[in-house]
Length: 113
Length: 112
Image 1 (cartoon, chains in turn green, brown):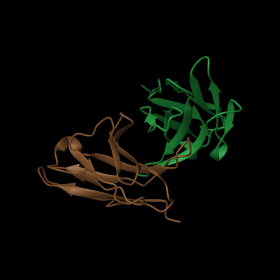
Image 2 (tube, each protein chain N blue to C red):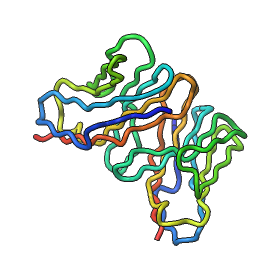
Image 3 (spheres, rainbow over the protein chains, first blue to last red):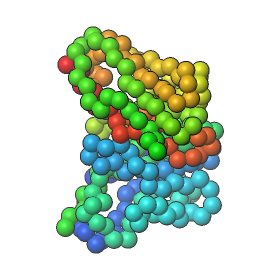
């Protein structure tokens, strides 16, 4: 069975500082990994995904994520945080057999001016 | 280009009432999903469908039913609403093989 862990319920960073939101996963086959962002009272917006290829994936709004197979991790990063990045972030995984996405519990990112 | 459209946006139900949450997508996606989001719990899969006429249970299907008569529509039926079904419901769709999953804006349901 697939699973995702987001070990931090909340992450706080100062504006302009780098940010990292952690995610580890477990799947039986090859992982398809996703990050989504949710703003208050809105749906989930796609940020980036890893399917295959380069371990460093670049996505929307300056975010990137690094796939680490040995550590089964897919941490979300941004070099310089903005106040507008404050939101709820979800990591999700599916294996290569078109199974539904399994989500982590989410990490609330607060960027402080 | 509407994407995934959910209705209604907000609804208050009394215990024991029934209702249908509507979901439609205009991207010709085969796969469609219903998730519910509870605070601090992430998203839990209720039901999903890989094509018209095919549906499967997810992690939390009890108290819900679905149908998929067309590629575009995937309604979620709540029978005999209970307070435990108070949640935010998200419909989503995708093409197969690792493609991006697109979400609707959500339906906020309160059962009192």
